Length: 443
Image (cartoon, rainbow, N blue to C red; front, side):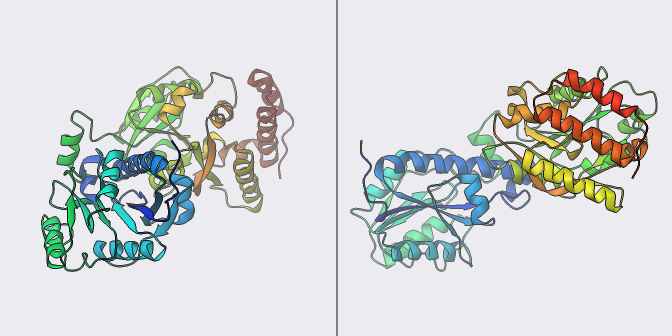
């Protein structure tokens, strides 16, 4: 079937908010957590857009995404191309909808339908009904079961948005009263249910677990008694479960981790084995692998969420920073961040994070004697982009201080080069060990 060339005349506007943890779906935060509520907002928006695209593919309707929060670059990265993007104007909901309708009519549209993103049972056929109804009616309304409406369509500008008590059960009733006073002919669609409250969630998705962590932060340890508590403290967040996986420490690492209240498990020694064990136990939808001497930045959950909102991104990491404040170390950090950004090879001490289904799909960390993080990243790169978040983790410089800045940097570059060139980790491991035993260089 050919596509009708009427995208200018018919416009479908999707009113949405860029999902920022703590700022969207606020009534669901007590049940889902800030990131869980934001992730639900993301899923509902993507589902609404997919339904709109299904409808527009056959009818040729132009799709406009009118967004609150965020910017065009972020929205485009999230929702993809082929959309008209417009920021919502100022004012309350009614003022913003009125402005969106006026702009669409000024741009030449003669049938405009506006829909929200809170309706999980929305179907493409309901868009078809709405546009068809506008042929013989001045407006169309899709009533929601909470007393509002999930869709409104107009074929010319109308004063239907002033004096409405938005957010109440009287929205639909007050809107219909306005249409009658103005002598407008209205068509009413079948009612649908919004998803705004924990009760809505339970009713629409019965049996689905409401409160689960968004992130599982996995910390492998081996004799880290001096670092583990501060690292755990930097990772604690209401959207996060923390799993410490110990590889047989002989000091007080396990006791000190346990007294913070996080989950502590044991595993055979080996960072890859320990991290894979943590991933098996994790309940979060995102896995974050954190070295025991690395501290996460403030608002790190929001940074992870924002980085992974791009569906083409398979994994991410933070920028690197050391706790050693000297010019040489700052130069090393600059090179590390340059390598992460342009070669897409971040180290494990940058806090690698990945969606759990993607991690499972690639088989987890390879059981190799060296550079398990870099080899995992190479695997993940085959499944999507590797992005670097716009925030720094702070990693201890103890390894550089023990071996010397120059030697440690040269070792790291040897490993990166080998990984980038496809050299086997079993070949790299003895080279790395031998280099460590050369006469020590210092800057």
